[in-house]
Image 1 (cartoon, one colour):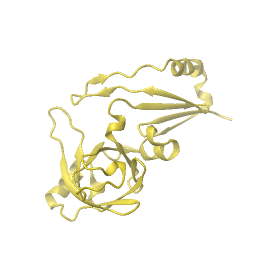
Image 2 (spheres, helix red, strand yellow):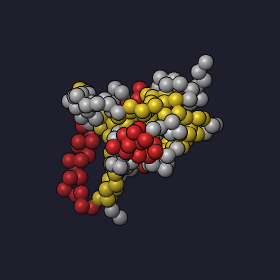
Image 3 (tube, helix red, strand yellow):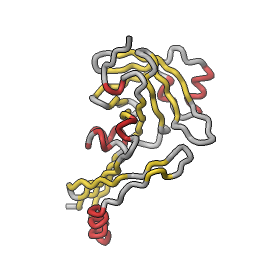
Image 4 (cartoon, helix red, strand yellow):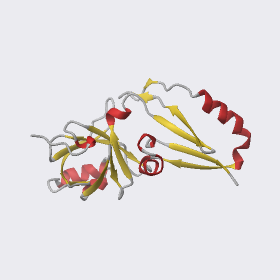
Length: 195
């Protein structure tokens, strides 16, 4: 019998791993049983998808992913595919829909929440604008183009000659999640007028 402890841990649930920087490749985890999950690279046409089963255990507020059964060959594959963070035990903090990996600066979000669309968020002088992004298929081709945010376009046009008077900050992954919330994990561009 399967017992679900959080939304992201339900059996068969697929989660995206979103990094705050470019140290780690994009990847996903899928919960296979109450004690095992599959780590995999994103599927790409004509490319072999990396897959590895790891074990985990759950406490009230954390998931510990451990690699006691990972062979030397699998350890080398982890490094070669950009997943060296899984060479050691990894602790994920359960936080609502998200799973946080503070040590590796990653956040895992539910695939189903971002499957149809997600947004790049612009925060300009304290006002939020959401720009729907395009989604690509396994061939890397744009499958669904995001709709243009006309209000954002007008705002950017109105400040384009004054950009030297703005401070720019970019947040992604866990950094964006901590500061702006769950829906912001794929990126926030903050433009704030200099004082």
